[in-house]
Each structure stands twice: as structure tokens, then as C-alpha cells.
Length: 213
Ligand SMILES: NC(=O)c1ccc[n+]([C@@H]2O[C@H](COP(=O)([O-])OP(=O)(O)OC[C@H]3O[C@@H](n4cnc5c(N)ncnc54)[C@H](OP(=O)(O)O)[C@@H]3O)[C@@H](O)[C@H]2O)c1
Image (cartoon, rainbow, N blue to C red; front, side, top):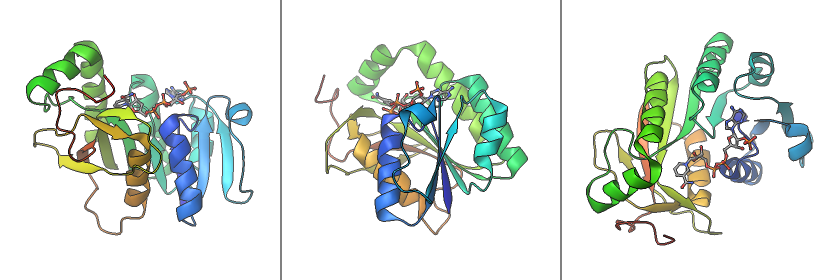
């Protein structure tokens, strides 16, 4: 399959690309602002770079040529997200996986929920909630990832999921774990992740705030 990563210069995107190359036979289309200057083709024949912003329709349509699955590493640009959804519809690419944030359904209980709201801010949460709503209202086979607080730890790929309607659990998760989850989802044969919005965290981190705060 051909996996299109939108926002490919981002930190989770780098890990997703690395894991796809090492763990699978899939090809990569890497889409980023100034992609040619910032990203490298390390495996010729399996990688293609496209320069562009989410708001730029022409390069986006070009990047979607032949794509089977799209991973979007940021969902806070409303105009850009609308453009991505329209371009996917036009190119008949159905599978969307996107990175959002925890708290968009007011689903984070207790002291951690209050801390998160204070730290992220109501306006940013509202924006992400509205943008997630655009994806949920689409015809796409989407998975929205509501990521908890991110940190980096090599070889820590532990993740757990909570489902829409459930209380959110977990104050932190590594970017390595999120990237592994995305690769696992790409290779998932069942339809269990389609049309879902999942809370993503590390097991046994039900704390009042992340350990690094
Ligand atoms: N930090 C946390 O604790 C936390 C918690 C929950 C969720 N999140 C979310 O998780 C996501 C992934 O995390 P990360 O660490 O990998 O983020 P990151 O390194 O900031 O990557 C996001 C990427 O998206 C790209 N992007 C954003 N808008 C774009 C646009 N309009 N056109 C083209 N590219 C665009 C950025 O491009 P440029 O490099 O060109 O700016 C950046 O490379 C982020 O969206 C973040 O908001 C973060």
C-alpha cells in the first residue's frame, strides 16, 4: 500500500515513516512544507516527497495520487483540514487517521481533566473539537486519535486505548507508542478502528498530571 503522511516533518510523522520502512513493505508519500529541503529519500523506490501546505489544493491532489491511507499529523488548521477532506473525497481515498488532542468531548475526569483544561485552554480545545466534528461528519473511514501528553522514550511503545463515550485514562504517552499504534492500525485487517475516535495513552499513568510536569 501507499501511505501518505501529511505534516511529514513532524516528530510523530518521522517515527511513523521510520517504522513503516523497517516493519512493512508499504511505500511512503511524505507531504510537508518545504519537504525537499527538510526530508530525505533514504529508500529510493519506496518514498516520494511532495512540498505543500494543507491549504494548497494542487500539491495535495498530486500527493493523493495512488494513496491508500492518509495520516494527518495535525488537526488544528481548520481551512487546511477542510481542504484535506475535500481532496480525499475528490480522489476517492477513504482511510483517514488523524492526530487530535484529549478533552474534545470533555471526557477527561478529575484532577487531570482540570489540569489539562487549564494547560491547553478552552479555545484550543473548542477548535480541535470542531475540527474533529468535521471529520466525524465526513464519509471517510476515519480514526481520530485523541492523544494525551506526549514525550519521547526510545523503545517505550506501550499504548492503551479508550473509546468515545468512555472516560479518558492516562496522563502521558510516548511519540514512539503513538507511531507504533498508527503502523498497527495501517496493518489492521478488521474494521475495528474505522469510524472511531480513540483516546491514546500509556498504561498505568492515571495521574493528576504527566510525570514530566
Ligand atoms: N505535545 C503534546 O503533548 C500533544 C498532546 C496531544 C496532541 N498533540 C498533537 O499531536 C500532533 C503530533 O505531535 P508532534 O509532536 O508530532 O507534532 P509536530 O512535531 O508539531 O508536527 C506537526 C506537523 O504538522 C505540520 N503542519 C501543521 N499544519 C500544517 C499545514 N497547514 N500544512 C502543512 N503542515 C502542517 C507541521 O509542519 P511544520 O513543521 O512545517 O510547522 C508539523 O511538522 C500535533 O498535531 C499536536 O498538536 C500534542
